[in-house]
Each structure stands twice: as C-alpha cells, then as structure tokens.
Image (cartoon, rainbow, N blue to C red; front, side, top):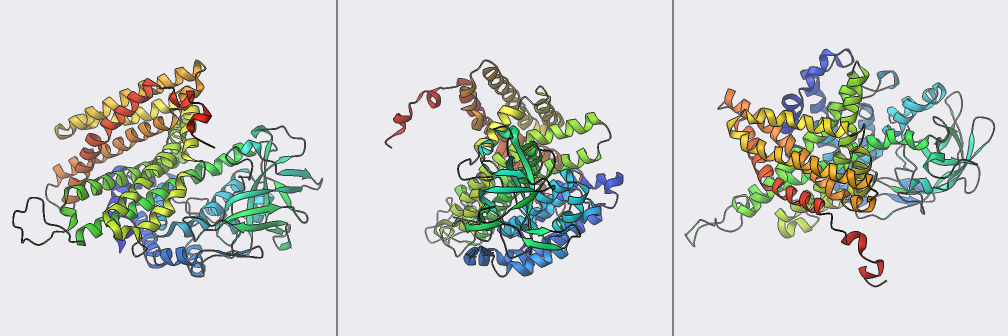
Length: 604
C-alpha cells in the first residue's frame, strides 16, 4: 500500500543523503529537528496519508462537492479526515510556534506534503490556501489582524482562500474591477465578482478569511493601483467573537474534469448588502504582497502535480510486475507461458522514463524547500539574497516545468495499464484528470515561462541564474572525478554551456526590442532549463550512489543505488540530446509564430 503514495526510500534518500537536512539541527531555529525527529514526522505523515486520506481519494471524486443556496458541502468523509489533519497540526508545519505553527524545516514539511498530496491532493486543497492566506496575515497584518485571525487560520479552525481572478480579467489581474470604498472607520466596503476560487466556500469550517484584491476608489489603473484586503465570511469582532454575516456569497461551483473533492467557487462581494474588509498591508501594494502567497502556492502546485505523477508511476510499476501478458521477445518456444509486462522493452522504457522523471522532480521540489530553510537561517544579507535568488529562478521550474512533465507521466501511467488504465477500476485515470489543473492554476505554465524569461533570467543582472548554473557545475566537477560518471558529466556540461548561450541570445533579443520573438520561445526556454536542472539532480544522485556502492558494495540498498545510476544514465543520454535540439530551435528563432495572420489559423 505504501508504494501507491510515495517511495519512502527515495524520500529518505533526498532528505538525508542528498540534502542532509538533519544538518540544519545545528542552527538554533531547527535545533529540535535531528534525524530521529525528521524520520518520525515523515512516518506520522505517511501513516495519516495511507490510513485516512488515501481511502477517500476515489470516494471524494465520485461524491464530489454539492452546492445549494449558497452553501457548499464537501464529501462527507472529508470531515473526519480534516479533524485529524487539524489535530495533528499539519496545516502550519513550518510556521512560527507563536502563532500555532510547528517550526519545522520547509524541506521536512515538503516530505510530509509529498505523502499527503500523493494520497489525496483534492482534500489537501482545503488546507493549502488557508495556510497561504495565513502567511499573508503573518507577514503584512497589523497586530490586531494577527491576533484576530492567525492562530485560528494556522490551526484550521477557520479556512482561507485567495480571491484574485475575475470573469473579464482572467490572468490579467491588473484589469480587475473589484472596488473598495473607504468607510472612514478602518474598514472598506468592497464590491465585485471573483471566479475560480478554490475552497471559496465550504462546510468544513465555520468561517473563511478571504484575502481579496481590489482597487480603492480613485487608485491608479493597472497592477500599481491594486490593494489587498482581508474579508471574513463572518465578521470578527474586536474581542474575537463572531459577528454578523458579511455579504460575501458563493453563487456557484464549477463542474470540472478533476479534483471533484475541491470546490471551485464563483464569489459575489457586496451584491445585496455591505461587504466589509480591512486593508492588509499598504494601499496600492496588493500585488507585491500577494506574490508572497502565490510563490508558496506555486511550489505547492508543483508538489501536487509531482505527487500525482509519482503515485501513477508506483501504480504502474506494481501493475507491470503482476500483469502477465505475452511471451518474452527472446523466447523461441511457441508454447511458453506469458511473462509479466515489466519484461517487455517498451514497458521498461516507459517505467524508466517515469522513474527518472519522478526522482528528479522530487529532488527539485525538496531542494527548493531547502533553499527556503537556508534563507531563514542566513546570517548575512549577501547569503540571504543568494539563496532567495536561487528560489526565485527555481519557482517557475518547480511549478511550470514539473507540472508539464507530471501530466505526461500520468498519461504514461495510463498507458502501462492499457485499456484498464482508461477505466475507473484503477486510479490512473483520476490521477491524470486531477493532475491537469496543476498546469493551469496559480498562473498557467505559459505565464511561468514568461516569468522565467522576462523576470528571472535577468534577475540581479543575471546573477541569480548564473548562481544556479554554478551549483550545477559543482556537481559536474564532482562527477568528473568518478570514471563511471565522467561521460554523463561531460554531456550535462555541454547542456549547461548551450543553455547559457541560449539565455544570452534571448536577453539580447529583448534588449534589441525583439520582444515578441523572444517570448515566442519562452516556453521552449522553460523546457530546456527544466531539462538541465532535472539532469543535474539525477547526476547529483548518481554521485552519491556511486560513493555508497564503493563503500558498501553489497547491502540491502544496492539495488536502490544501482537504480539511481540507471536513472541518470537513461535521462542524460535520452533526454539531454533532445534538449540540445530544442535549444538549436530556439537559436534559430523562426518567426512563423509571430508572422502568421490571425485569419490563417483557420475559420472562425
């Protein structure tokens, strides 16, 4: 059962052997998190995921959410699971104990979330935005706002959401029309409509605290005139007691292809009465504040997609070991019995694709969390800026690239099952459906690509991107010292060199005013950057595995370490040559995408 959710051995490998997270316990902030404590946290998360959350995955999908008269009922079984999740303190794992958090390293929290999302990520959507909304209160709230809301949000007693998207504005948040009028008493009256709001209404909690983007009357147009407000579903009095119902109403929920256990709501503010809110942070600084929440959410979306892919892989692996069909290709006896399909070359190709991709994605996500821990522990502004720069570059990869690959892996997971994968008898089709939204929400992956090219490539005059590639080079240099890995290191080094050339070429095009040409290649650039980072993670793993096999040539972990070598070999020799081809296409900078007339795409 455990292998259906996440591979514990691989989780432990990344935490303890690749990142050595227990080394953080030497710092005052994480002194309690030694190896024993970390393993206990992961084990408890695994137990909760397997025993309570995973059994509800199919049930929640089939029952779905129900909307009636402004009320949203989530699957009935989610209520018990939510109570257990709250009691375990899992919502605010990495947050300040002062406000009810557990204060654990972000890396460890990601390992726990690997299990939670792998078991039932539609359920987890009820918790992620509540935490993100709480983080906004912690970072930008007044003492009064923190005291009123924060502990109840971090404990899960109250929920939270993120009200950004509007029917006409969509991803162009700067075009929003939601309006805020100063009441002169510290509150604002807010009117407008929001759509695609995850957990915007739910019967899991009695109150929901909504961060809402709106424009104060008379503020400038565009993103520079947007402010952020806290709008409770039920007004909270100064003494913390609940007051009257605020005029923030769910008008409907979407019928979706996946994540049926999570309600995606349409919300009307101030349509029939008065919707009150309080300013969170500074006026006209709402977008910069919201990005704090969005970056956290984007990393978690990467985890959602990856968790689907990892679960799909483990399901496919177990099925391929048990499913007997067809003789071996090398068998000459026509009367020979069939063999498990894992012995067929094409199935092995699919499984190794899924294995290597899943392992690299786990390393990218956990590494990004580790960088968050290093930012928290940094003593100098220079170190803090360096680690934050690495995070900033990695976020579009961790969200955009990872979820693109995750959906492909879920599709391959269906393929291994054949016709059975297309049925509801097995979880593969649900994982594929649920995974798709991860490429869309929290900024479509096209937006992630534009972020990487337009903002992150040139961040700090290009130093952040350079620093990331310098980290890749350190692993390449280590691998070159190991004869069995030198060829793989050389191939990755070629990729890094080509990636630098491509990045510089795109920057020059933007500086020369050829913006459309550059951004026509934004998504391909995200692809090749992601390919390179994935190969780095796998080569890094291979260096560790080679050293372990040298020190312990025969142990219970021999097969695992040998599997790491094969993952790196397969990925670097099979994917990176294609990545070089993609880079050649980018350098060619064909203009068909820009030049084609709209009418030439086809009839209206």
